[in-house]
Image (cartoon, rainbow, N blue to C red; front, side):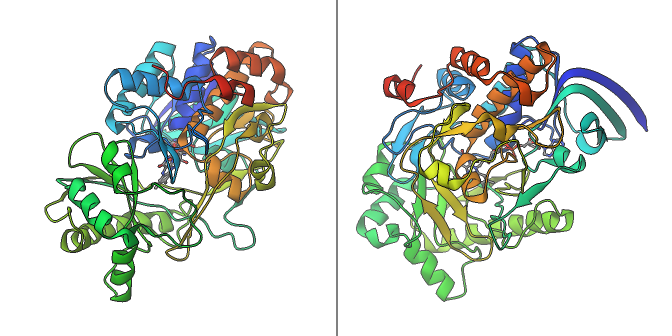
Amino acid sequence: MRRFELNYEIAVVGGGPAGLSAAITAARAGRKVILLEKAGYLGGNATLGLPLLGFLDLDGRRIVGGIAQEYVNRLTERGQCLGHRTCPKHNSVTNVDPEGFKLLAIEMCREAGVDIILHVEACRTEVENGRLNRVILFGKGNEISVEADIFIDCTGDGDVAYLAGCSYEAGQPGTGVLQPPTVMFTLENVDTMRLYDYIEEHPEEMTFSATIDHRPGYDADYFRASKNHVFVGLRKIFDRMHAEGKCPVDRETLIYIKSMNDGEVYVNSTRLLNTDATDIFSLTNAELEGQLQVAKLTKMLQENVVGFEDCFISSIAPTLGVRETRRFKGVKELIADEICAGLIPEDTIGLGAYKIDIHSGTDRSTLFRTVEQPFGIPYGCMVSAEIENLMFAGRCVSVDAATLASVRVMPQCMTMGQAAGQAAAMAVADRTAPKDVDVAKLRKELYAQKAVLDMEQVQTLPMNEF
Ligand SMILES: Cc1cc2nc3c(=O)[nH]c(=O)nc-3n(C[C@H](O)[C@H](O)[C@H](O)COP(=O)(O)OP(=O)(O)OC[C@H]3O[C@@H](n4cnc5c(N)ncnc54)[C@H](O)[C@@H]3O)c2cc1C
């Protein structure tokens, strides 16, 4: 085996929306930064064809800025994003071209001077007296041992924190049931306009169960008006298929994202119940079964849904989309009562307002509850309570299960990544621990980077900014 010993000021593990934002921000602040990623590309779930949800609140006001808005602006300039559009169901939808995002991620890392190693997976840590000295990664017969002043765990599952022995919680309260993962896939040659004619004639296809909130206007005209939408519907067809034992997925409806290309949709409708994506056997089963569901669901759509008759699968996502695993113990925990009350604490590093969106891990239902007003994401939920030089950003932060179901959307993960990267840079410069970072100074820096931190700012922001 070849062994390498590396030394950095800041090491970010995981190059998804959170990790990219953390690494780019820390490097822009002048620190020596490495980004370590197990896949052969950057972007994490932002490359699966998913839209960025969570930019706008229930009233259509933009509540996210900073690096998240910068990705949108730069992709829009290239014709790879359509900006933000309000949505009666999801508050807002911001479609991005997944391949465009992948390439922009490389460019932004290079511009900022982030060193990158791909194809390496964190597999060991060395912890001494509450300090993380090293993360050891492995890839293709190479062992990479990384020393850093500060580590930021952006692996989604919190693999670094887990390997370092940190405490965590997982799943819904009481049961521990995890939201199910999904294998995303792309269909071509879908005649969406015929589908919208069909749902106009059959509005019952757009009825939802009592656990799903939405506003009026989520209808054929809305879908026809722009490619910037997410379609959730076909309730009656799915009910009928289930009743006949012919529905291959545990779902109440079809969900797809209309891509910017004619006839192309990204389908978000496979569901792997009772999966724990941190258990390698369960993960393997979900990947394989999920891929098989793709073929079966496509056949069901071809045979039963107007507009899908001649569609074909053009790609299956290279990796399972995981909604929920571990949430680590931070110096603060953000909980559902606080987000539902719209609290914006003094140490807020960004805002959220997305729905509490819980896909059932044991049946075909989904809970989709409105968050009435924006809430603040406190700095402390990204700072490990147990390891002095460890931070988290993205899906593994310190929140309860219902809060994760809102803040897991990508703009909020990017927001957390940016704040973690900036805080880590300040901690290195001041030779202090993340928990001792001057949060007022951090907020000032984030404000200068156009992050959105309070409601006063929200009142004045344009929805789109190009
Ligand atoms: C099916 C599905 C649909 C969703 N729909 C939407 C949506 O429509 N809009 C929206 O905004 N959000 C959506 N989300 C939520 C959102 O995609 C994620 O919560 C978000 O991407 C989390 O960002 P992250 O950076 O924390 O993690 P990820 O995007 O998962 O990125 C983690 C990165 O870390 C890498 N990594 C993992 N483990 C290791 C390791 N041990 N060593 C090295 N690297 C590692 C991974 O390869 C990956 O690149 C959806 C999620 C899923 C699964």
